[in-house]
Length: 563
Image (cartoon, rainbow, N blue to C red; front, top):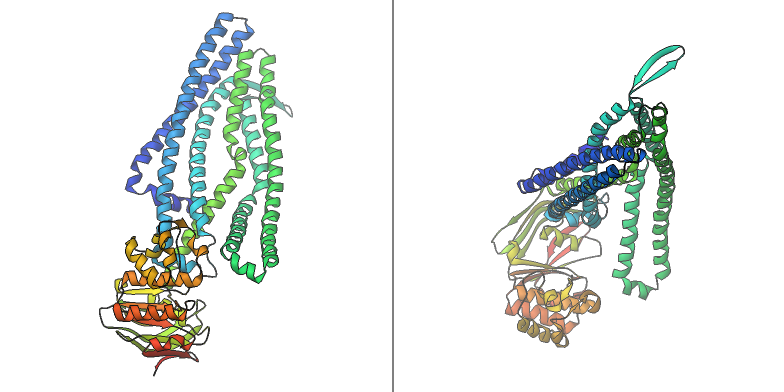
């Protein structure tokens, strides 16, 4: 529990130490005030029960009617208080979620952490779930339990005094020893609640770990289905549906097996809670019957004491009533804390010996360079590599030697290296991957990504130039273009992006590998001759070698310039 509350405080401070949380702090104080008022109203309802049932016992019709009027007034007041307490609580939840989501998204995206998470074998799973779902649950449960605990505490303080007064004194004889027990119903209520809480915890303490695992299994299952959708074409061509179904069923089996354990555990807790609260409906009457039989209290006092007993046991049994939700709250806090801790741990990867300097020099220079995999295994070393402006350079080598990874290091998204890289600032250099990314939106928005929307007429001209004029009338159409266009068409779109950006340097990781030879020629010709762009390309074949005047070759763990 100490660990849980430490993690909870760290997460809560993200918002409640900010200046813009002051208005919500006032709203929380308003909710607290309304909660106090609501508990006070419940004491008035408790007193009303005494007066109402006493009037019934005395056959006092006028008093019964008067008490019904009083009940209506109390009910209206309780409705208004509950309504505004709910409203203020939801406004706080809305603002809190907006801020917390913004912070988590910012931390996730900062410094390419979102990219590094995919490289880390010990990555925190499913950032989308942590941000999209767990933040909502965390805030809802936090507000619910905070206000609930306050309500339970106030209820106990107010009603234990009422119950103590109604209990009076009862003589007890044990082994010949006589003594008077004051407030005996209070002691029975405390014993009843503590016993129920202890048994509930013994039955359900493993629910926290089960819920934590369940969220991971659910996310893994969803991720497998998303992969199936993303690579539907390749899977269909491979006829791999049987294999994919096996993977899906394996993940579904893990999910359902864990869920079955949760069901069995919650069945035990539900049985306990049902018996506990069934007994609580009659038990308070039974414990107050001795006073009623001795004519110490009348029917109204009996009903009032039963109501007060229920309130006291209910406040002390708050943990029993919401045990499964409390376990879920614990698991959510643990997942969010682990996610946030993990993305901050990625910073030590970024703060290694590598250095990237943005310079205005007419070259890209790499010196004393050692490129590594995420497990720190060396890919290759390079004493000094120089890419000169105006000289197109081709990077070659066998598969797996680190050509693409080399470009990622130059781009600044691959931190696993030592050495120095000097390159132009981001505004003057553009990187194209082999598989372009086409966001959801209109075709015009896809082509101009990630920049502002380009002029439709200019884009149409480029489409005609690269023999894709048939897409001109679809520029304003919204669709999943990643699924509609072929890989060759997508690569042409990435080249058009480069033409729109007009960079001084263009680094391409096999970005024309799926384009026809005429389109490749047009791309290199336009970029080099019309835009004066210096191109660095990765390629396996000699088909694009003629468009480059220099070559960098990687072989046997060494990268060097070759004629």
